[in-house]
Length: 182
Image 1 (cartoon, one colour):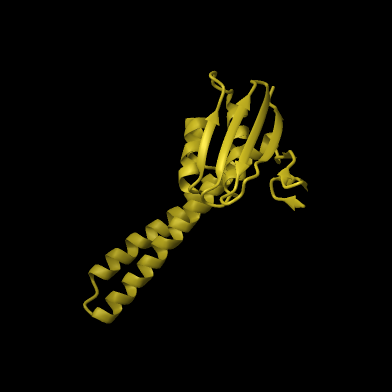
Image 2: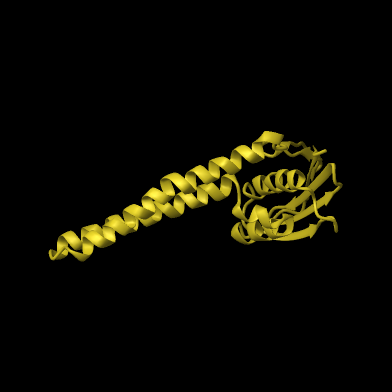
């Protein structure tokens, strides 16, 4: 079987180790810029449109027109939220705060039970962002209620191991990655 997180095989009801897809060195910067472009472009433009609709609605006396403007305003606000969520999937804003806050925030968002085993030392900027994107991308693929263990070791050569158990399953799936961040 092939999954979005890598290759894995099932033998005797047990998951064998698989490999996680490691984001390239330029991917982190590209994804950050893409998230910024979504936020600064379309999301900012739609926010301005929502304000314009508010101002326009204040000057309209016809209740039918006013209620239609309110529906349009709610649609615009929904589009803004969708763009921000998309931006968060591309490059989670919490990533700047560190690996632990990123993992905990994503676990809460996706309703995952998570246990972290992270290094006591702070990872360098490149290692932190690439490792964070790797873990974030995988956590986004899991179904709610999945139990996840994330273990990270190293500095310049970062080893990541994610072990997961899906709801209702008694087997654990082990996934690994090695990032060269030197």
